[in-house]
Length: 571
Image (tube, rainbow, N blue to C red; front, side, top):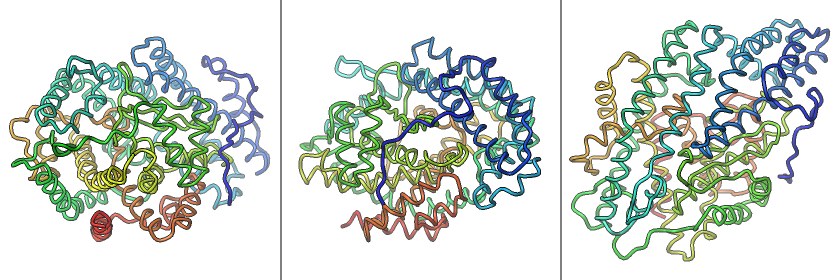
């Protein structure tokens, strides 16, 4: 089957073609009409759903653009004010209407006549949103939506000077790959001291977020924010106990491999003790990998890479480039991190990242490219709600692309030796990421189980949990201050709470997809596309099944996949 990236903006049938969202007064008549409309048949109900979906898509795209523009330039107060206005003045007025529309749908006598298979997950999400809604929480959620973005504002201003030149922290990390160990150590300290300079502001921000999130959960009748957030994230198919099992499995079956990798790194560098500024370094005489110079070159090389894998994948990035939906270079005033933002009306999403010419940037680009392809494949689905796929399968889309694309990274590297090094580092990363995922997830479970904790208890808990997932090969002596606040660099804790174990579940899925790919490339890509094209129209286990995967993160399964990755590294 052939696929086209010639994505079209959704045609409007309910909203005026030239309608722009500027204020609540402009939106209000559409919400009122949907609430008051009589529904006298299942056909009328399906048309009502399509009209509501069109309104949702327009609103979603509007808020996404406001957030994209603000993260691209955190120093622009007008862009920040535009986002804040939406969250404080428009979103709170929408929420009671959305709740009433959800209840109107479930109370409609024709809802039982909707195709059960087609609408099961959609209606399950509607019920979930009704269960979560509490009018007292409207102003709190509005405040949270604005406060969460302050992490990017604080972090976006962080820079250091190296060799007399100013760098963002993302740009400065490339010095941690330098063969000069003294330079690496110097830059490591500069980066961490710069983070420490804002530790109090970041602690205060997080404490405020924590208190408000806990209040939201209690207001909605939940025992804890953990319980509230699990439902909000749509975690219908696994529990908190499954997360704890994942943490233990990482300790049992992943940490021994991490220890081996770090010991091999120590020997390769010819040093007595491996320090944190050594883990990305190359031995003296070996130049760090430098796969591209700037965002434009990264874009063109990523397109060439995807073209070799499957022309449709390259066409997706080409379309985004033509539409101006890429902002890849790191710069001062830009929020940290990277994301792919689906645009519900336009269809072609937006990729945001902070590239600095490193292998990690190649990985980020193909990762976000996988998310983008997911957006393209789900765009033709009939309702906006059908495209709100579980994050676990979304991360399978992105992490699988990291592994699928490796054989075509020759476009980034001049020699077979460089390509070999890049693949080796990527496979190491596949293993080394698991302890960090477990650390972040276990820390969040502690945080929200103990919401009244002090700052000292927070730092102590972080260090204790970090110790569980830190290799004894890695020496952190004398770095206690940095370690106590290491959690502050993780954007997700501030902006998307509890969103992190998804990466662990998805990495297991991605390794499974790669196993398929090694056996039969075409069959694996077919399974990949088939699963992503389903969007949110079936359950998470069924999405994994469509991809030819087990939805399984037991210790035995994790052990089996780790051994596969280890064998591939030896090969």
